Length: 246
Image 1 (tube, rainbow, N blue to C red):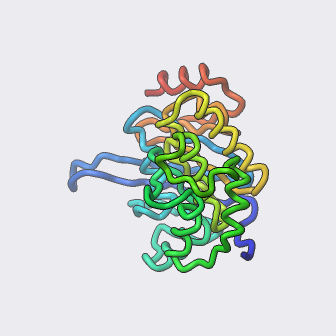
Image 2 (image 1 turned 45 degrees about the vertical axis):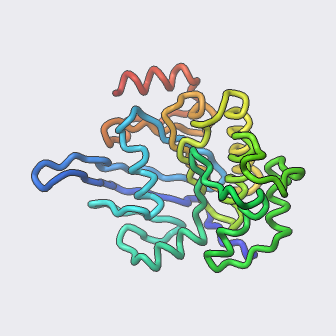
Image 3 (image 1 turned 60 degrees about the vertical axis):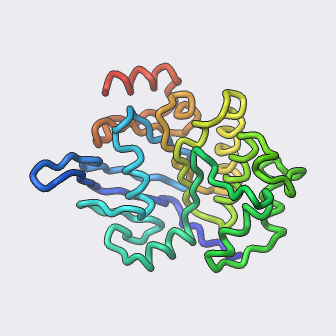
């Protein structure tokens, strides 16, 4: 597999707006958001419910189009790209991790990792999937199906699946929302390790200040506006800033 990762700035948003509602009575999901995300870093986008976190993820991943502004993913403008171009960019450059794991119950952990990539037309050697299982600490669970795995183990499989095609950017949408405290800490440690070991840029969308605390930087969204960026903030400070801005 060739290295298709981009260098330095992986994702850049400039004055991104996304409107919802009927003409004349629009509500803004995003209002003039400017941000950039670099390789080998873990960033958290946090804020209260309805702040625009999920909308930012959807626009940044090319899953929905902004009303205005520009989005560059690995140097390619995506806000006006064709669906075919967006499919290629997501296939080559983006991985996704979700709160509910989204594993196929009838498949083993190993099959869950490599099958989606193969269905997308990518030749993924089984040996590569095996190495990823080892990387996420599940070398002994290759033949286990999701029902035979704990929630934390299922999320590890999902992370390995997101990494199998060698993306530059990994979006994690509330990745610990369905996990207990111990499993949450393990998944956060794994995401931090992923940024160091592979150089991938990880963007975590979360409302949880404990999750946000683990990031290199925290972007606070309120009512669709990026109101603050924090580095080195504790979970208590993040919670206070988020509540104060809401």
